[in-house]
Length: 303
Image (cartoon, rainbow, N blue to C red; front, side, top):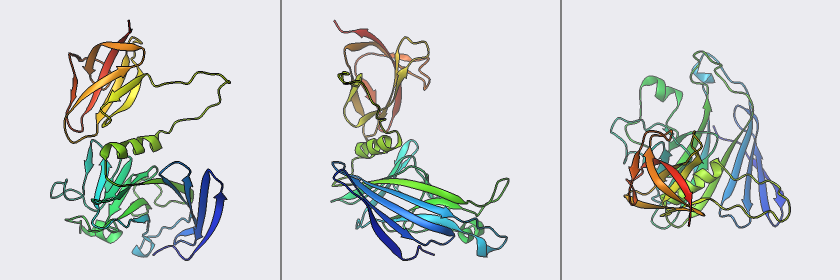
């Protein structure tokens, strides 16, 4: 069942932010409100879906329910890509024959693109997606009729909750809950741009007030090429070095250069994820496709 007829009203019409609120009835909810916002200068659409969930539970199939938020993207012949842990996956194409096709876990984002245009969408609060249709219903999952192939199409569903399982925990959800999404249209899919959007939305910069005349703060480190991202930068446990974690978002090997502001790294050591027990790197830092690499960098001032 779908949400009912909607009432649309303008919430903000300022020069910086413009927002619409879409209100409607929804099955199993007291109300459903969707806020859509755009910000001047940002090529993004911010969506917040807020619902007041009723507790629904019973011992018959008549009470089984799940909540899905659909994104029927108009991207003809679009390819769906999912940001999974350690990989970017195209349903079916990048999966083993008997891998799960009913629903997919995502880290930060999904993307639907064809040769001319596409959309990247971040999902902040709900890590499960279904593609092409709703493939995870009670009858399908409990009768063993698992999908052999992902369903076709460019519609993606954010799978936010259900009451199908009830072992050792409360079998239903209730109350007010919000789900946040950010959409960014683009001309061509670039994996590094999608990763940047996902990281930016998941860990946004925090604005603070400072005294007038405070010098601008600049990042201590820049990395080339742009397809290699810094996912972590922090002081080592002994306080003697910087720990840098790099992620090569490209599907080919890269030679990486680190540019430290007012300092240089000597030596650079490839370490374990904790910044310990590594081997020295002499010359360019080479990263395999989609590799994650942790470095320990001992800095000394530039002459």
